Length: 112
Length: 296
Image (tube, rainbow over all chains, first blue to last red; front, side, top):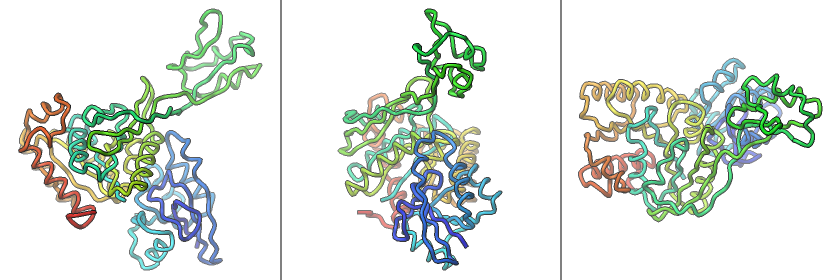
């Protein structure tokens, strides 16, 4: 299972970025391989409109099955994610990536 | 560090007047971000010094290099926006007409045309009279607000708030339910909805709340001019109850609300009675955001 976190840094100790569309990085945790990768999403700063759908598309390319974030995604991005069948969990904006993963495992994050 | 965003959906509900009052009450503990950049008004009440400014570039616009142009007119033929007039025998781009689609650049036989990002406004970091700092922006005429600009204003404010150990960023959010509002709400810890008891007030409150709900953000509502239409006020209150939105206060219509603004003051400074109601709302917001009466 590939789980993607919106984060302000590149590893499991990074703080979560509560935003979806304009998140700075993705931290990608592969539960099967126990591997951690990251993706630099900062180029999104240059997009005037439509940051959400573009970031959602990126998530599809990364092969994410689960997304954990703060309080996104907005309407358009949510439609893209739903079509791709990505499960979305919110409410992890104030946590670190590790804390967010533990909260997800404990079932305490809200499913969007 | 928290982020409190004030939005209204409908214009004219008193959002900015109320945000300015909250900014006054929070004083030095807050950094203010004015993300209502289409009609930024917070500066009228906060007396910013425009201490630092930075140009803001966004969108796309075509530019014709006159040295490379052979005046074939192909660009003008294909432009769907009639944005390439001939002025003084030269083909030039009308910046208000150009949509930046890039068709002209594609057909130009000498590659004389390229797209660039125009300057569409300025972002400021100002000292304000509450003893704190405000991040705000001014857009050029015809330029549109965007998620990009809102994200920039908020990011500057958040960085400052973290550096200076403030308790929160207070955001005067963008109007409507489009891209700038999505960007205003993204990352928020609490939303203050300002509404009025009119049919459109309630309608736009429902619409904008759909967005807040999608983001899973806790919300409170201030009903301004609550006594002007009691039946719609009741409808608003039952909507709030249904959606578990905190009723922060009901402010009666009072001409002093506008008097304060014309005198360049916030309501809490200008009128005791109205001021008390807003102070009470601020205390409720603090309790909802920090689960305590004293966030420091």
